[in-house]
Image 1 (tube, rainbow, N blue to C red):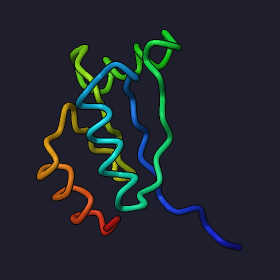
Image 2 (image 1 turned 120 degrees about the vertical axis):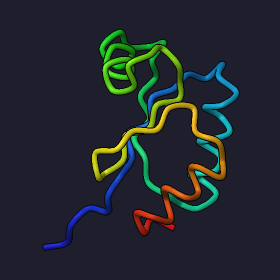
Image 3 (image 1 turned 180 degrees about the horizontal axis):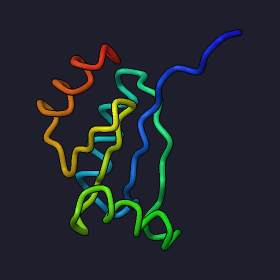
Image 4 (image 1 turned 60 degrees about the vertical axis):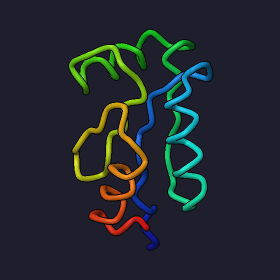
Length: 86
């Protein structure tokens, strides 16, 4: 039985420049993620705040349970490398 590759939960919004940048980096590397639109869902918005402790986006929840909020590209690269996702 094949297991699904680990995926990132990505909480963001279409108007957010940092969200678009982080999403482009994930897509560039072909890293799987599930997108949660915080503008379309109060549940997703509340979950993002619960995870990060603040209202900033993007919020990325990694398969190891760690969370990054508004990560720079170098920080996101470092985390993806650490987890063996790139």
